[in-house]
Length: 102
Length: 493
Image 1 (tube, rainbow over the protein chains, first blue to last red):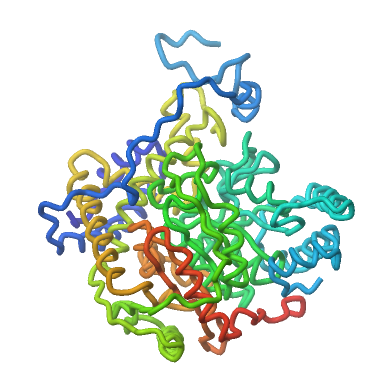
Image 2 (tube, chains in turn red, blue):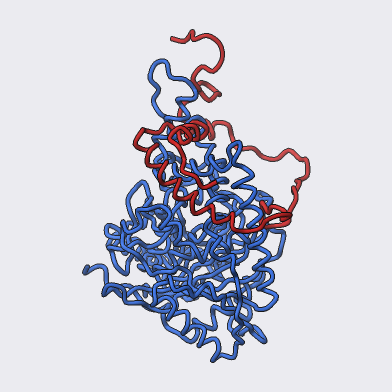
């Protein structure tokens, strides 16, 4: 914890995050994130042995609704906000198999 | 209209036909027209829609119909609270053309109560920031000094209320994003207890931290708005199944045997001296009013930002994974040979601004293989310690008093270093981490570089005790006039 990030690490994180960053951005985030992580290293000063993690401020478990079919949003309304559609479907670049498209 | 009028006085005036809803709405748009070129509070306004709604409310009032508790009151929404009309952009390029197919619960409850939505306010992109500078469509300015920030991320909402463009607005608060701009703009801002207000239709940033809350010019207005938007909602499973009290009932009665806690860490030497002076005078005022002032020790205060900047980016990086250029939002143009991965990575790179990218990167890093335990798990353990520290403090006192922000409004561009910006939330982030409630109220002014700037006082109470929080806030407000002060006449600036 708290060491400086390398450019390769930043590039790897950008890949995981699905962000295509420029070299300039990679370098900028390397130094800025390193500084933030150095501040976060403060947390190592605290003894947390045996402390149960708290992911959520409220003591709630899953709340279940009755299993009843309700009203759904019209498909057309959702397709209308999609950037690319084909008929009733969202259009995406080819994912599987050989490239055979136009 | 008297543009200093409070929501509650407007509700009465409308009911008694002393003013018309149409006139009120027209006055708001006139004011926006006059000032927004300088302040840049609004991304979008809805004059036609608002006037139509106002006409129908005037008609109903004329006919003597029984109307809702906000009938005819103009309200602005932060641009991350979705409505089925207009756009909701989160001040981001990635949602620049986005129109929501549905309306958020909080906005719907306002509309059902008769409120008139006049527009959407600018904010830091996806509510990530403390200055409203990270807005893809331009920087919001502080009405008290146009060279300074209004705070953030709900800066547009705070500045609009301070500049009398509307009597109230909704914002969202993940680590201080309602309270800090309220403090910097001299208005009232409430971060309700986590689970008090439904998050359905609030664009998600940190799902275990986010809350919608009101920004107004007085405590009673905030209590009035909160009562309307709060309460159970089956569309948000984290929203509490608890009845919402009538906050105005008894709001002018101080809590019995009131004990006010002052954490010694809150009066840090690192605060602007004027801020500590304002908090000291507030402590004296409460003492004069008969409150017992209790010394409190909150040693984990200084670990709040470190904890927050693991948890909030971690949650943000997973929440913002939904912006993929496929279902809605911006989609990048692909070159021949580019594939689905490129579609994601290019759309997101083009659509997100620098601060959002930074937080996605940070969140992805702390959640990535090999670092999860060292960062995320540890932060969640400290989160429990922070909550326990608050629990113990509330055994000794009804409320914790301190500054909302370590400084008054700072100059645009002054905090270019991300960490220095993050530290603006040192007194507000822990409220969200522990899920308790907090309010910022106008408590004084400071002279900084020859500028007269508002300073807020923060009052934090235990979870679901907004009632006590409002009563304590009212004690201060009833004996001071800081909340009535107006920014300089911007029409002549």
